[in-house]
Length: 496
Ligand SMILES: CC(C)C[C@H](N)C(=O)NCC(=O)O
Image 1 (spheres, rainbow, N blue to C red):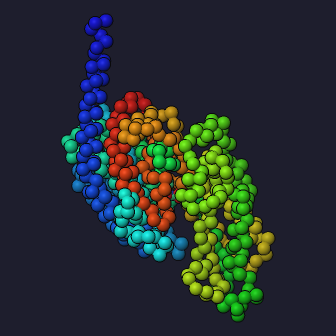
Image 2: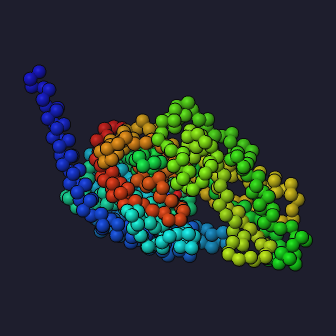
């Protein structure tokens, strides 16, 4: 009795003391390097790495090279992996941005985590209504405004800085860290599926866990994310006369493509949000009682949400319905019409060819291949009823599946512990209405467990005007990642 009990507590005491000491030093390091972190973000935001605009492809290539160079300078084993070309709608081929892979540490006694992120962005122009130049990071009251600041450049940098902090203090990384950084996330992660498949038994063979920080909190409380919706993105093109026509001279005689297009788009969803495409809702897994209870317990203020987005009424008025329709049910969004007159002024034109862009967010157990068929068949049948001489072409350009994790996995316990340490609060367990196309591929192809650990704020304005990352989330997020690496190292090696 006298000999045995003191042994374990004293070992534990030593370990926890060492960790506490390291953490304090690491935190001090992060705090004293914040300005450099902000400058690094400024440097990255300055590159218009818009993956949807083919004219910006050189910038995107430059962005990938910049990310690779940063990791190389830190001594990582870095590769820029060629993932081939993409075919453009006109048949031309365009080189895809290379994928950056990097590795820090190769100790088989340690866990290996793979951090995934992306450095491409959505389009942004000052004239869209930005208060500042979207590509000139601007600090206003502690918020860092710029396109891609939150989605996903600051989180990627925060992960890099987390590793860099350990290195700078000559502290051994508690786990091996790999990075996969891509440049096509915003347009469906073109080429990345094939790369993951090709490297499953090489780069990914020793990866134990995958970490993604490409989403946001639901409120001011830190969150861990265990599900994302997928997305099926469609083009519906209606073509009529051989060129645009004067609406006074020809209007009334021509069956107009735009009228046909608006007519069929109006049959996709009812004003109360019911998807009208036959069969779509059949595959949706029913909301379980347990989920219902979980949603009830989540801190979410509907009035605050409404005021944040500037509306006075939502589709639903109670919390569970709002959360369920944000995360757990499919929805149709019509994004835009190419070929339509949209400049200021009053051009009186009949557009000859118009292409609608719409998407359907996917939830378990929807299957993009089935959704493609359901949507295509339905739109053609609706169009046929119009007896129009115009032609309709429907194409699905993105088919990303939803992703769902097991929240009982030790990765989530480790996440809660890291949040508690850094923010001194419990974390929300949330889902995400947006899509990270590659999440499901990582899960299906590598068989590894994934956690999403967001550091973005609930009001960051992703894809919107005035996107921002708060300095607080950026810097505290870096500390969170530092703490998380330490927590993951303590997961028992047998659990994957
Ligand atoms: C909030 C999303 C998961 C963030 C992600 N980077 C994204 O924008 N994905 C594309 C999408 O349309 O959801």
